Length: 382
Image (cartoon, rainbow, N blue to C red):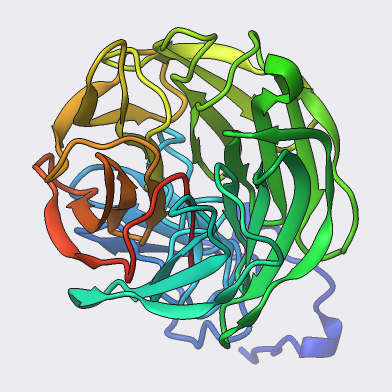
């Protein structure tokens, strides 16, 4: 009996129900619509560069957590946790803020200073002079984009609304970026990957506000109104997740414990998230990918060296996870991807740079010194 072979041109469609038996070995190169999952006993890291780009899935076979790559920038990848929704793998502050190279401080009170300090994350060292902000002032807030530092507001002979910017790549004098809506100092700073947020502050004739302003990193211009805190205040401790800003503690005028949270994505008022372990303000804020830290500060009486940790997106009281090497208020906070840094401060004025690990609850250790004793300074990182 002769066999008629079907030609490719004669095949219009195949009914899957009629396909039986064992398929012969064939190449899968032409198959489409098939997505694989990378299996590994550990989480991905920011330098885990997926060949499949955005949308690549990663399963941690130890914890059961699943991650999706939502930003495939070599060495700066963002892996979003699609299991619990917490513990994303990325730099904090929208994937741009947590530094890998250096921390910076700007302005401060030594008398009022315009100096920008720079120190390396990788080794214990004394900071170097990176340049100057446009005007000496203290009590301002610090923000960081991928390439520039921003110093907002402050006080010298009066309250200021100025936003300065300076480049991380070269030592230089800062330039004017714009203004916020109020003349204040002792404000709180948070940031997304594209915008800086200036929160509340102490203003003219004892005026204390609850407004949240925002400005865009990429475009020179004035800030706009984003919303309000639940209560007036100043000296709160700012931290940032990939999606939200947090303002902890502060004064009204007595020290308080509340932690408030607001969304970066849309204008609106902050909501109460939880509390610090002790009432305090004018400490330094540091951020990991899943937690915010409030280090040092001023309580109802003495200064404190306490390091509090609060989990992003969790309504709970913060936990005391360690101590700084010295008690102090009004320091600057910087964050690498693995450690928090607390710089300078008032105890009286000191130049000490402390560091503590995000991975392990423990006391801070001495990382080095700023090149002058200074307090009421703003912190940055790249």
